[in-house]
Every structure is written in C-alpha cells, then in structure tokens.
Length: 368
Image 1 (spheres, rainbow, N blue to C red):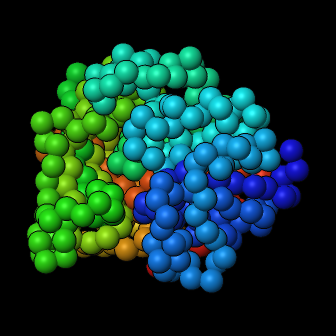
Image 2: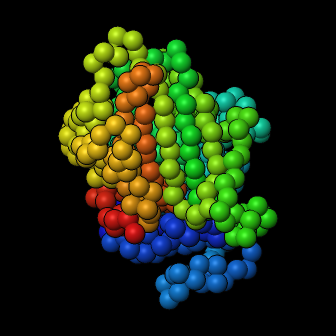
C-alpha cells in the first residue's frame, strides 16, 4: 500500500458523522481521493453546504464495492446492521474497514443480539475486530484490518474512567453513575419534531432512562480495565445545542483509599496516565484540567472543570476531577465533540495508526 496516495470510502456520507469525515479527510495530507456514498440521488454540496467547492460527489455503495481493490480504507457511518453485511467483501479485497456504527463493538454475537435486538450476520469477524479507543489499544490497532469505533458517550466516559479503574481506587461493588448530555446531532438527521429548533430550544430531552444501549458497551470494555465486572448506570439527554458531549461520572471510593484521597491526587493520576506515565508519551488529544482551586468554601470555581465549547470542532477530550470528601465520591467531568472525537475524528485517528501514519494527520485543529 502506498500511504502517500490513499483512496478512502465513506459509506453513509449523508449523515452528520459521514459529512464530518469528509470535512476532516479533505485536510488529510495522505488522502488523495474520497468516495462518499449515498442511497439516493442527493447532491453532495446540497447535503453538506459547508463543503461547497470541495469537488466531492456521492457515489453508491455498489459502485464503491466494485472498486474495492483500489480502495485503501472504508468507513461505515451507517445504521446498525449495514456494516456487518458488507465489511467482509471489502476485507477480502485487502481494504481496511473502520466501522463507526455499533456492528463490531461487542466481541460476542449474543451481547449484540441482547443490546440491538438482531442477529449478527458476520460473527466470524468479531474475533479480529479491534475496539478503537486509540489511547488504550494503539498497539492492537496498528496493522489491524478491522476497527470498531466506540460510541460517542462511551469514548468520552472510557477516557475519564480508565485511569481510576486501573488504579483500584474505586469501590466497584457500587455502580458507576454517569450522566451525560449530547448535542442534537447525536440523534441523527432524520426529521423528529422534538429535535426541531422551536421544540428543543431552552429545553432538555432525556431518553433511554430504562437502560441506554451504550451502558452494556461501557460495561464490556471497562471490565478488563477494572479487572472485574463493572456496573454502569447511564442517564442521557439531548441538550439545546448542536454538537458536543458533557459527561459526569461518579464513583464511590474504596474504603482503603478514602483517607488519602484528594482532588490533587486524582489530577496527578490522570496527568501521569495521559501525559507521560504508563502510556510512554503524552497523548496528543487528551488534556487534563489541572488548575488549582482558587476560591474558598462554596465558591463557584468554574475553571476547575472542562468547558464544552473548548472542544467543539476538535478531536480533543478534556477531563477534570474533584473529590466529595464527605460522601466519599470521586467525580469526573469529561467533554468531547460527539462528531469528532466521538465519531469521525477518532475514526481518522485509528486510520492513521492502522496505516503507520502520523496519528495527528487532519486532526490538529483546536476547539472553536
């Protein structure tokens, strides 16, 4: 493969994640040709007017499959059930596959069936699919053929929680409580009245409080990090903004660590983990909010925690932490852009690692 002259397919490019992939790939120094697909006869620049003048035009999935031998990487930004139907054909043509949907996120088909309610039609590929949290699985992603990109809520939670779980500081006999708010782009681009501007403005839209589909994904991939089963209570809502995830996690501290716990200790752990500790080098897209507390009791010190607007449009995850001493609770705040780090950006980061390229290609822009 000539990695200086890449052809990349984006299946499902009419959606928000697919459009964001095209936007970012247009600035990738090694990508020469982008083939976005659509099921209808849409005009690319009408669907994505921000990419006016890009020269991109929709093709079809069938046309992309016909040229698979000349395609280096294909991204699936499709509803669950689509990637599993077509991934094998691309892999047979030596084309790498990055699935931004949920089809390959679980290692066994029974869990997929339980969460998504359908049979997995490519169960034979699940064993080789690498879960694409680049910061944690970089060595396995390098050289792999098939990567399962995490859900947007999930990657935002995993990056914050993993250092704490690996440390053994949490009492995992208690559930990990997560509350997260996503932008309305996280609901897709199909018309839904509750998501219309007039309905969503000045409002919040809680959903799936009976058991969010990303909770089993979190439990599946955090259990190895903790070394034991993890129970996740996940509550989600759409906020009255377009893009971004604001996520808070609360963990009960293990009794043997309670007397020594502090915000400073938590920040120290997170900083070592992502800025030169066990990972060996600073992570390019994870930032820890380490500002010292500047106010006294009950002062609203907003600078201690990540701000959602600081990551909008970027591939960064910002993480902050605090310690509720009276109740013995570790509190984490993490923010990402659901369309970039939560989808298209992390997918490109994985592509770069798969192909041995500079991991930051097309992803160096800071937040808006």
